[in-house]
Length: 616
Image (tube, rainbow, N blue to C red; front, side, top):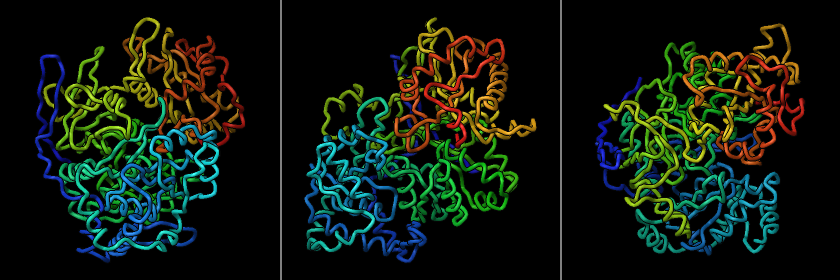
């Protein structure tokens, strides 16, 4: 297994806070992300850079071809009314044109705002988030996959004057007159570390999405730090097959930029971890064998059935991997165990599984894992150049971040910016953490929950939501696809469960029964889960970690209601708010599990048995 041991320095302050730093020194800022494309195009013009499936055709682009298009696009973008005050806005899925437009704009100092195209979908009506985004940034131009649809939505939110053009076909842009070469060179020469490269948006799960300023320094320092920590990556250009949306920092900054920085091949996966769409991911992974694979827990869960069912596919997937990378949420123990088991069967050895932690405001990395650990919630150690401050609050340590990877603030929101930083200039990320080993800071930091998500029972006992959720999923023998922890102000912890339908089918098949998604079959699953959680409770020391009530939700988490993000993880706060009636049902006496299985199965508010027939 690959293992890089970091030298982590610790400073303990009189107020009880702890400062952690990586002794590996970050080198001076090395150009810009677009300059990396220029460098590789000069050194290896014929090397494959990007591929994309368009209809029945595979579009491929080399580094030399990409650089020429990037230069042509930059010369024409300079002719458009895009300025440092009025950015370009992209509402588009991942694609080669998407990547080239962003690189071209960044190369000449034109800021690009990248927002999820889901904000303009019919399911997002009345489009409040998009309205706030457009109001915040006042875009000079919008590029979209669905030009007519986006134009109609903009008109509906009172922004009909914003021009929308297609990103799928850039002929309209290439037909524009190009700026003189000297003007392009002059614009590129003025791009520096503090130049705004991108605007990416917070999820808006607890309010209006905020436009996070991403500077060139943030983006470059992140990839420099990651390659310094993972020096083995420079042995060979990586091969990456990836679906993670570029409107989020994980996909758009981390995955794409690490590939470009190392001169690798990036194969755009049109799939995602959802019923039907996962087939596109499997098809992409059958075509290309990755050397690094990035995903989120829901993505691994969706991919595992295909890996477990086909040893040839599993061998193809694992045989050339340096490591798997998980982010967005801790990888449940049961999911990790399944990944290790299928890899052992296919190749004889478990894969290296790394992870990291950060946010849109840290572009995205703040800590990274590069060594084996038994802890699913180990966030790793600070990246070179990054400092982590652990501040004692209510018996835990709030994590704060300072470094060249941290945003200077939110776009034209000085009050929100000021509130996001403490007196020492550390960004308040909103998470809590604790050291794996107080005597060895290099052992990593354990995620200790979101400050805003944790709550108190009626007894005053604090509940660590992340810890309870992970422990419950681990105890559920794969029957829990995901879960939301409830109980604020109540007498005990309650669990709202989204069932794993594949595991439910396997459970009933072992009893000679068919899982049809109806109340009777779900009742058997619920009884089994209740027994498992009772066994789990017997090992717990107090009310903060014991599950008192259980309710299986028939209706899956809905992305259009922000219950599940584009990256596939659960939004705890949104689920609890939207399903308040289900929380009330959860705490009915018949749904208590302390004394064994209940006699009645609640399916949650506004649910029907038919809604259980689909995927989890």
